[in-house]
Every structure is written in structure tokens, then in C-alpha cells.
Image 1 (cartoon, rainbow, N blue to C red):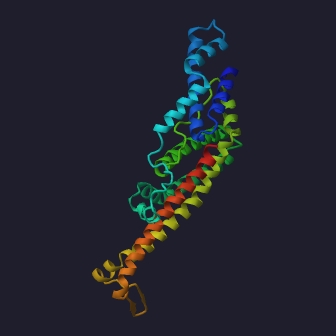
Image 2: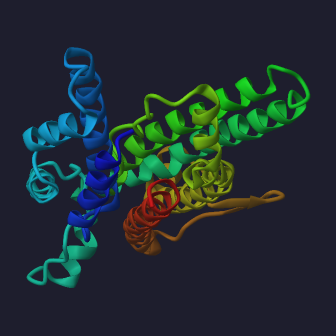
Image 3: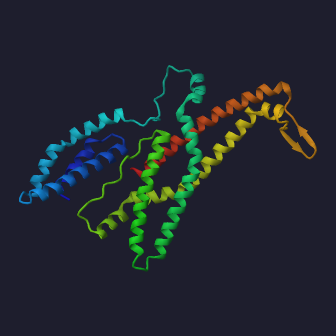
Length: 295
């Protein structure tokens, strides 16, 4: 790839200093793919023209790094994730912020992610461990390196999907396009590029640890939901279905009638706390995913 394109990408990265890392990654990927594709097409159409002259013309049409950076910053203002965390509103009372979670779609999306993360954790962990194990077993065979290269490519694809899931359910901005693959490189050079990219290994580490986080998220969420719903639905369970609070041998324990309203209130409060906890845990997990998959 032309040194001028590398210099342009470096300048664009500096011009985007302070922007969201996911935005920077998307901008660099878009610019590199556009400049490289345009250079390949121009080289075929005008082989007599020097490469540097072609690159200057392509960059002139694409825009300076500052212009492109300003364009991406403007676009980001109108393309923020639907469930992006909102800035704290000082006008709302503490009670409004506490009970407002019941009508906050981000809280319900967070609850779903807390439960769904166990599924993704099992899939990612199984895929990562199986891929690494088979790659190690095939290392002595001629198909070992090609298989390992395909496995590393699959990791990139899975983590792109994971990023889209996190952005959709947590509102944390994640990359929206795959990393551009450089043309003009041989198979071995592409394999070495994948092997030496630290994001490849942080992605594999993320996939392995996702099982731990998935179990933790699922267990905490299900436990809190079970307790809150058991308190909230206590009148229905006892008055309609004749289900006691507990039964030890032949002795049944029931909630006193005078305490039943407090039981329901406790269930509502615990459900609200659960939704706040799910929303907070999802945000923290989104930041962890951005640290591992983007930076």
C-alpha cells in the first residue's frame, strides 16, 4: 500500500483524536478501503501515471483528514445508538429516576442481555477452545496453518456480531464494519497480520471470559427476578393457588394478611432494583467489550 495512504490514515486518526474509538476504527476502515479500491481501479485505467500522483488525486476527491474527521463527527451526532445512555438530568427528582426505570426501554434491553449473555458465553467459549485445540492438534500437518487462519478470521466475524448485539442492547457505540483487509498481501502476509494483531488475541480472551461473565450475569439476574416476583405475586400464589411460603415436613407457613401489602411492595422495590442493576451491569460489560475488542 502506498506510503501516502499510510500517512493519510495517520493524519485522519490524529484529526479524530478525542472521538469514540469505535468511530475512529470505522472511519479508518472506510478511508483505507476507499483509497485502496480507488487506487487499484485508477492503476488499471492509467498505468502510465505514477502511483503517488494517483493517490494525490484520490485524496483530493475524498477530502482532507480534517474534513473527513468533521464529517464523521457530524454523522455521529445523528447516528447514536437508539439505547445510548443518557446524560443525567438534574431536573428529575431521585424518586423519578428510581421509579422511572420501569418505563425505560434500556432497562428491559439490559435484562434481556443479562439472560442472553449465557447463550453467547457458551457459544464463544466452545468456539474459542475448540478452535485453539484443533489448531494445536493440526499444527504438525499441512492443513494446520490454513485451519488456524480460518479460525482467526471467524473470531473477527463473531466479535463483529457481538459488537452489534452490545450496541443494540446496551447503547454502547461499537464498530459497525469489519476491519479492512489489505490487498496486495500474500496469504502468508495476511496470516502474519492476523497473528500479530493484538485485537485477535484480546478477542479470543474475551470469548473465553464471556462464559464466566455470562454465568454471573444470568445467575444474578435470575436470582433477583425470582425473589422479586415471588414477593410480588405472593397474594396470587397464596389466595388463588393455595401455595404456602414454605413447608417444613407437615407444617405450612403462610404470609399474615396484614403483612401481604408489604410483601407486594417489597417485590416491586426489589424488581426496580433488579432493573437498575441489570442496566448498570450491561453498561459495565459494554465498556469492557469496547476495551477488549476496539481499543
